[in-house]
Amino acid sequence: MRTKFKWRKMPLALSKCDFSKKDISRFWAHVDKKSRCWIWKASCNKYGYGKFAANGKDYRAHRVAFALLRGAVSRGDCVLHKCDNRPCVRHLFLGSHIENGADMKRKGRAARGDKNGARLHPERRARGERNGDARLTLSQVRKNSNFAC
Image 1 (cartoon, rainbow, N blue to C red):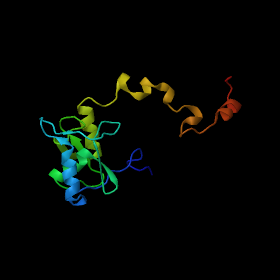
Image 2 (image 1 turned 180 degrees about the vertical axis):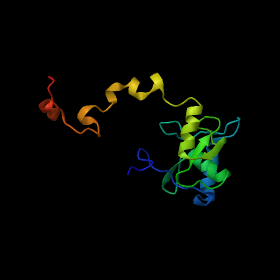
Image 3 (image 1 turned 120 degrees about the vertical axis):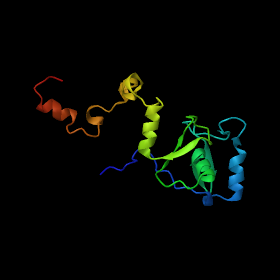
């Protein structure tokens, strides 16, 4: 049976108790509260989400902000952005993985049609023996086929 989150690491459970007072003050020092969105000013990952390190672990800044402002985040829960601004650590709400996907689709960020990766980069698709579900190798197909390959 396949795991639910095979493609990415399951986020850790978080609560305010996981951080010291020093960590909390260091976290808020990296937040710009001058605009409607509170923007994370420290380092970000390649997807634009803020990164925060504490206790030898890396966390996404919006998950830490939710834990500090609203309460615990359970393992596997997603922290979603109401404003759709990835560095924002203010306009957040809790949801499941399915709700996160539905929110992405509702906001028009889901890849569909010509934006789909299969259409943009067909050369990256696993074809033939490279496909994990392939049952025959190319030599088996050539041997058992009436067609000239």
